[in-house]
Amino acid sequence: MENLDIVRNPDAHRFEMLLDGERIGVIDYTQDDCVVTMTHTEISDDHSGKGFAARLVQAALADVRDSGEQVVPDCAYVRKYIGKHPEWRDLVAQGQNA
Image 1 (tube, rainbow, N blue to C red):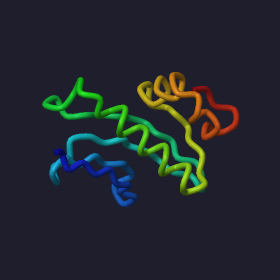
Image 2: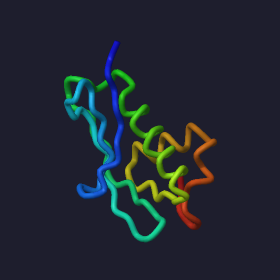
Image 3: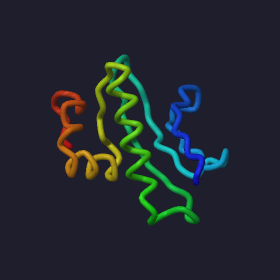
């Protein structure tokens, strides 16, 4: 059984995915008040193609929702994910596309 954690690291401005303590993925972001602009999603080559990116985005969006924030999906992967999962569209900041 894998030991997978997804944490928000505000000092580094990223969400981090840790597998058995090793960082295998990140979503970089900027923040302006209550708007989180997700700029880049990356999963290490050793772990790509295994669904980790989707799990990371889902957890990051859940964190944004729980924090009462909105999101700007500048990252193409995040934008595509929200487009395929309409339950997250309410998080997209007004005037932004998902």
